[in-house]
Picture 1: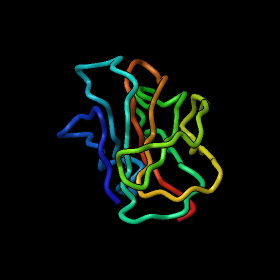
Picture 2: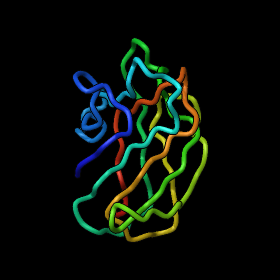
Picture 3: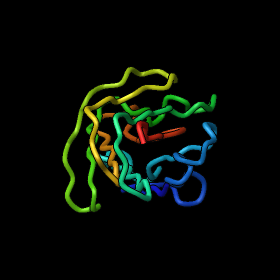
Length: 133
């Protein structure tokens, strides 16, 4: 899997931290540019798969742990990385627990998480995973 973000802290909190399997490393949008939403985090699965969920684990660190927590979102999928279809939208609770966006089975190679509302003007994630593939 690969991942790219529309905004990121390059040195300490790049987008790759959201898929590295370590919940204590995080992706964080650029510190110097808050409130530049929507923020996008796009995962390339590497091959076309049938998927049904995106899981989101907010940052788990003690300091600033609420900062950037994703609240409302849209999820889009694509087979070519250019043409995206919205598969679901919703609101997650403001908590540190793992949360899920569930949708009807869809064939996709790319999954985009569009962050619409978040805590303190930033976006962050401890881990993102795509399920059903």
